[in-house]
Length: 189
Image (cartoon, rainbow, N blue to C red; front, side):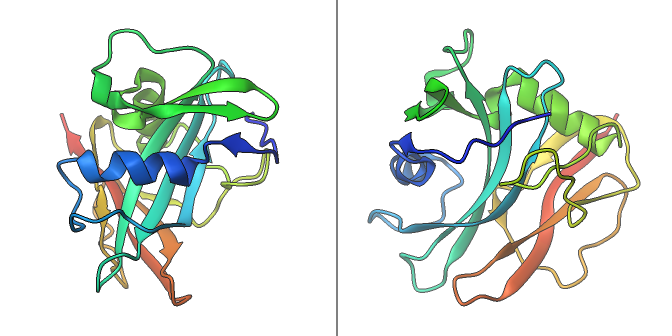
């Protein structure tokens, strides 16, 4: 079970993402600095208790039309060996745990393994900011095994298609409107 520490992080996750996000190939914003708001997400537990796992939704309000992005992140107590340099979102000083290396979850083997477990129906999504509390708003339609594909730029869908291997969850737009969409899909083997 992941323990959520209500403490400071310096720099904050949003500050790190503001610097990192514009360099990603899937970023749809303009040339200026993004203005990010935390808009939703959930956590997964690492059975070994070593890696913090969060799937965070951020909304960039700098463009005329806000864009929602899904950023899976792995929080580690030491640098992760064997990953490309762009996999590191940054480091931050956590008020309780000390230095955290924050990685783009698609490059973190623990994060990807737990996402696959979730999409097989073998992991329980947890609320983003409360310890040991399942998040019933996160739904996996017809769990299946296969390669996970993350939807980085999220689209609202009133009734996200209930096809096998779809991970559906929600976020909130800056005007307070609730949205739901497909966070990830499984390419069946």
